[in-house]
Length: 303
Image 1 (cartoon, rainbow, N blue to C red):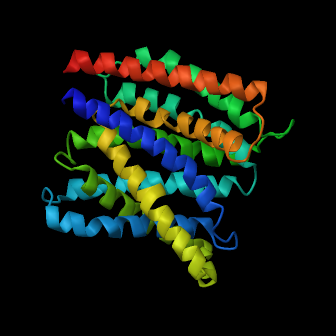
Image 2 (image 1 turned 90 degrees about the vertical axis):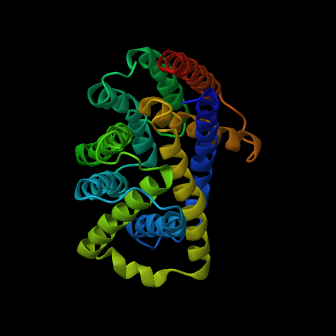
């Protein structure tokens, strides 16, 4: 991989973090009366369908039974994550789920060490801990004291976080074997398609599909925006970076999303930064800078 590809991957993940941060505000515009699992399934389906013409025109490697199983497995991981998130939010706050999510890059690092033994994962542990500490300071600033999540919520969302942590390293592992030759377009299309099918299956079981009748034109427009920019674009950027950057470094860009949300509050909503937020922002910035430098050194060794 050329250095230009390496730099482009990091630049793409910076855009990824911005799009993720913006998605929180866009998602808040959709009616809360609609089942969130159904909304997520529709987002994944719309995104997959947008990629379908590109897939048909560009072509891809022949689909095998093993390849289909690999995509289904990755799609299932996406479905488990989103399903567990919305189930957990029924019993705990967004602050608690956000706090648990800061563990995902660290869990990704562990999966990476198991599934991709040749990766230099140890060198990324300290920078990741620094960035995670900063993200925690930013997230916990918005939480009240004594808001401990229930054990059920922790167990449910914990399984979802494990699924998300497994997604990137398993994707890279499968691209070396059963999904070899799959580009970002094909990976995004098939994984999202299977993820949507699993989520729709859950909605049929839970009855959430009935809330689809409440969708308004405005909801559909916001849903299309989320499908294009918060889902399709982000997963394409994610799969473009996987294989160029270590999976644990890729998913660590979520810490920058937390920082971008905080910066939005500072500058757009004119909220004065608190000392805890300033410290958190500095830690996120330093941790991510160290991760980029570390990944560049690892890339130079491999190249």
